[in-house]
Image (cartoon, rainbow, N blue to C red):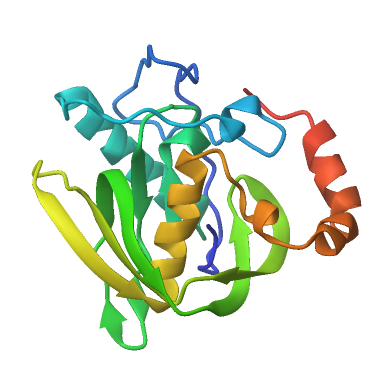
Length: 199
């Protein structure tokens, strides 16, 4: 989910095949998957055990998010890996600095309220839309220390968590807007779907 306004840097792709067997290089950011790639519509599998390979994947996802120059959230499915893992790095919001957040097997425990705000997505570049989501949520997951944690979130943090957890379920933010709004974006979405992108 993009937000920051920084000049993007070129990112080299690593060898990630989108299924269970994943070969990860130690230095290069991972290759983002874009609208039209079937992996974005698949449901990610729970991480049964957080091994060194999962921790390495999380580290590479953080690098990949940073390399985008404007991203604040990334799900493993967006780099072709069908594992329930998300990265959130919203930086500073209203004078409060948030540390990068890594969550394995995130689960929404509760939600309340309702708020509409603009969203975009690294996997659907240059497309934004107003999306209605819960205003406050409680999310549970496992951090890099392999500890279960519970997060009470609102505002931007809640929105990014919801957006990235949607990705793990094969749901894109454009699925949460009206049919009329989707039709208005249809030309741009078709262009993205037909674009020749590395896979």
